Image 1 (tube, rainbow, N blue to C red):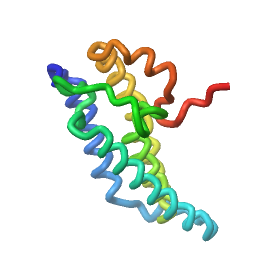
Image 2: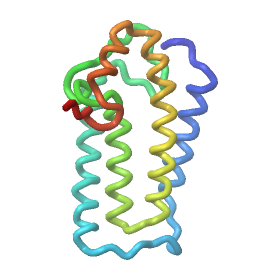
Image 3: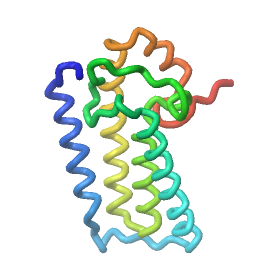
Image 4: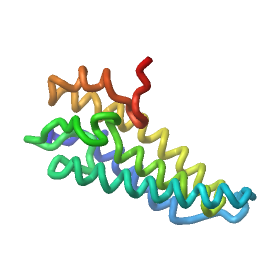
Length: 153
């Protein structure tokens, strides 16, 4: 692994805190949704789980909880990574969003929004570190989206 910076540890700690806070709920922030939103939530939750699983398998030995790449790691540019630079973050956000909709929780939606903000900052930092490690990263970045596939006209 590249030498861990304070930012690496800080990002992971904040992420863990948000994951922990997501476990709880505030009944005062329950939202009333039509039934189809609940069903959609289940589908989105399952989709998030599938994205996470595929991305983890494709990243394989390059996986690290920290934004800095592991020493000797490779830049993965196939599978989901051919289209999205951070599919694990995409999967986590999709999972959290789907479950928040399923349980109609404004609190969980708020934590999901905070997680999105964290992932924006964490991925910016991570991409700087990846660019230092992999010469091909800047070209890769031009053709892929951060959390969703890039739409090229």
